Length: 254
Image 1 (tube, rainbow, N blue to C red):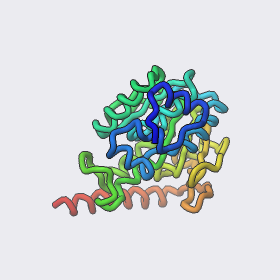
Image 2 (image 1 turned 180 degrees about the vertical axis):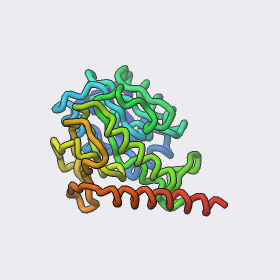
Image 3 (image 1 turned 90 degrees about the vertical axis):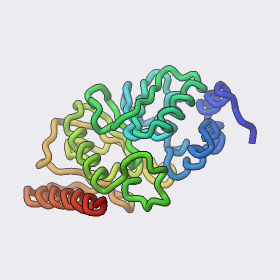
């Protein structure tokens, strides 16, 4: 397989003539090998680009950006949109930053940190590719052991995302691919969905201010969505379930 230069790869992305295998060669070998499981496929990234353009996004946050593939592909496709990827593993942030430099992209940046603690008012669009699922993977399927992975962290991250979506500005656009493991507040409406890859890319728009008691949308494992209103008793049960997960993780660490 011929390895494309940065300029050639960028042009091929724009023209739609590059495969996942060709694009992934931009990364170090171990990160390249993990692409099929962890990084956004080209086809999905292109579908997301169309949705972001359709809904007028200008400043996009990729929550748990990994090696940055989603941001890199979309930055090539949409030079007028600013992309920010936040990732907790330093090695992946370095790989993403190196790739952006090779592609000569000036509308993307990658930061080390926890995306759920970022000020979401700085962005008008958000992307989720099930970023917290790795917490529940068997050890042998996890990318590495350089960061905390636990049910406790998964529940805490999901809860912060749900809270962040409630606080996001009206008009915010949220793209999901395989969801994010949590619930989308009912103040969002499903504005678009496109079958892509092995699932569906959905665009949700925030139409009003929201409260937890207004209910939520759930993205179902089989591919559909459903809306439900949560009673105060159900909210107490959910808090208890999440607290039990924290306690269980603590017991396992003893």
